[in-house]
Image (cartoon, rainbow, N blue to C red; front, side, top):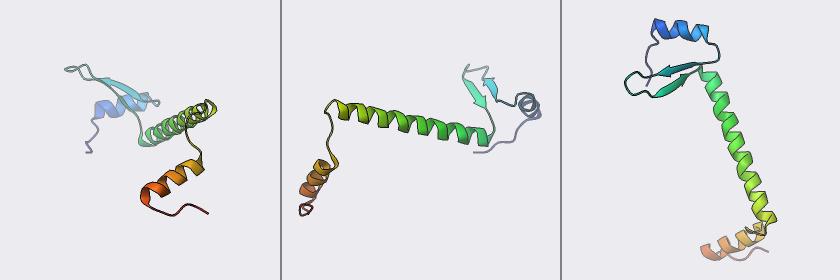
Length: 87
């Protein structure tokens, strides 16, 4: 959904180039308004950080002897799906 930007918010955004904190007076919910490119970059950075954290967690588990090798996983999948073992 896209809504038009009221003049009050347009002026406030112009004065706040790093984004604008907005509070709903009725619900007291807080929102943060920023431009689309900044939002896109922030979401990309968050995704990259989450990926990095997952990789680090997986490496730590592997060092602890947890998890399976690619060969073990391949063999399990082939067996479950009824494929012949890999050569």
